[in-house]
Amino acid sequence: MEQATSSRRQFLTAVGNLASASWIAMNWPQIASAAEHAGHGMHDDAPPPTTLTTLTAAEAAEVDAIANQIVPGGATPGARDAHVIYFIDNALGSFFKAQLPAFQKGLAEFQSGWAARHDASKPFSAAPEAEQIAWLREVDKTPFFTAVRRMTVLGILALPKYGGNHDYLGWKLIGVENQHAWEPPFGFYDKDYAGFEPYPGTKPYTA
View 1 (cartoon, rainbow, N blue to C red):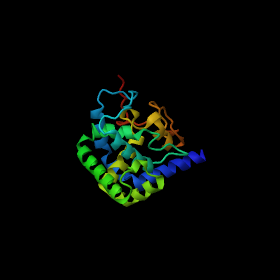
View 2: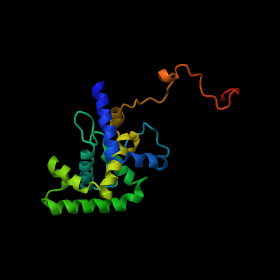
View 3: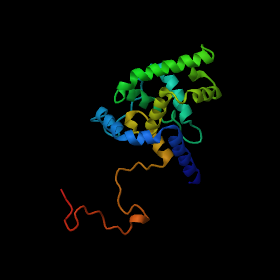
View 4: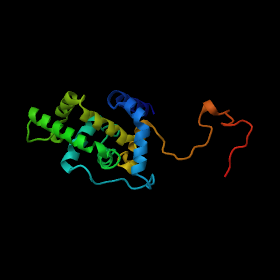
């Protein structure tokens, strides 16, 4: 339990420091609305996308490598374990479609910058981990890296039907219990709570 709590704390710290948690919080209503619009008619248990439909295989390999350094796997699940690349691919082809041209332009600049500083015959995704991390530290202020970082975190936490959070690994990482129905009391703080009455004295609505 102590190890799980420590892992969640480390992840939440990473979200706060690396993944613009404040940006996600401010923009979540729009993100959720766009996602629901794109997934209209999909059930929460709908099969997630498992093939690329927007990015090329080469583009996806680069983005996947970046995401895997943003939230690396190991003792706890990482972006690659959560299949974040399928969320990013799906998002850029649907509810984040307007961002695709800028994203691809940013990726091309990321790759050309990498080639200018390293062996041009070897893509970023094929480089040793230490070299990848060193390069990401140089470009972590760019709009492209910011976009990948945001979508990586969203891909870990979003519903699996959108492509990420494979097997609910992201939720398990932060301790979210996948349960659709809850019954009070939820904890010591409300064990004596009679229940919310929007208009005291009136009977609750029943179908």
